[in-house]
Image 1 (tube, one colour):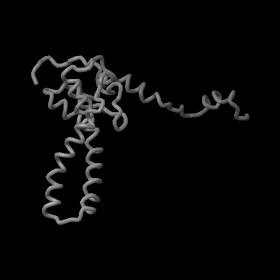
Image 2: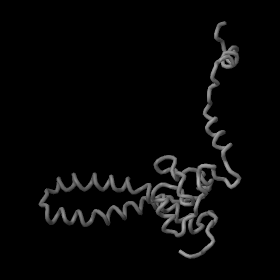
Image 3: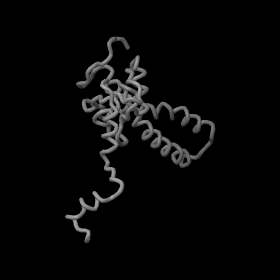
Image 4: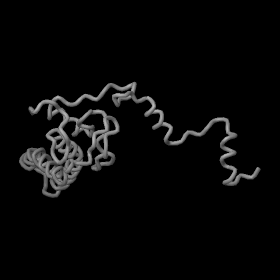
Length: 172
């Protein structure tokens, strides 16, 4: 029998093992879901007890609401919804603030190091620039995602920009 597009369903039907498609994993996951939203092998999501706990979760790139799901799909692109607790992250408006926080922290961390290198190391200006500029760039880029996660967590915790408060207390 020649293999033509019209015969593909017949060939697939004759194969001993049915092929799994990409959605089989999703179907299996949804079939295991309990009525409360969590899967049978996972504990229910626990809201953070304080703003600092939510900020820590966000800085680690985790969902501030449950602490389990990923907050970022790409380097600085937040996911639309948490895969674990279905929290909606589309209202977030971090804008340029994470860059300001990253630059501020980098400056405050590097300032004592720069002062020490200038005073005590006796390095030439060219050598200082060759050390400080790459270190500053790496630190700013490295702090950018944690800063954005922390800022999104602050917005979520305090109910800013369209987020709904989920916690019962109003302290912190």
